[in-house]
Length: 98
Length: 169
Image 1 (cartoon, each protein chain N blue to C red):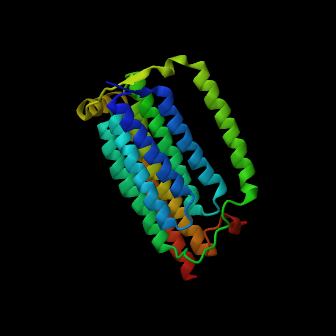
Image 2: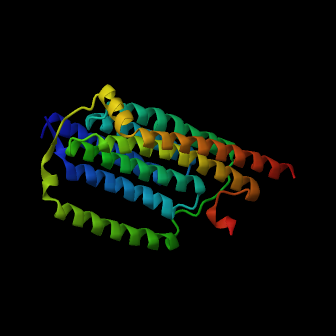
């Protein structure tokens, strides 16, 4: 049973990555910036799993598990920093911190 | 066009539409809920691409833990009154510049690898087999990642303590 060409998986991951990057760069809200980072990490995992299927090798899936763990660590630290910053300045606008 | 490719395109459309809706919402709770739908779509995509263990972990960690954490923080910080300047024009210039670089790199990669047009053959990595592989070949990386999570816990505890002191003062 054939699925789709690998380039389509990469295209999907690329568009997802671009969306996440757009969210992180253009939104003026710390929580949305962190959400954009999450989208980017997820798109990386999609690309790695497609690559694992293409080369019939489990290395890609192992890397995807590490991406999941790093996303969890990153988001917990990031949200703690946001709470810290919010308590100091009372705002989650990144322009308010300089 | 096989059944699997139909499922793939349907899932891709679901993921892209819900992510696009998520990044353009003004209301943060709506954004998080749309992103949960997107992550469920990604989990089904992982299952389709032969990674059932990662599909389960995606639902548990991404859609379950991370997004609920976001919801908690949004509820904790009272951000309803915060009027965000929506997609200010000044921010578009770096975004479009990075998009162009990304698109150029992507097309170069597509052209440079003609093998990527061959359709992928469906295969499944059994969770048992995958777990054995992970702990046999990547045990050191697993330990490092668990240490990283421990460090994250310590850092969050430290930050939380300090933030509490600052409000008392």
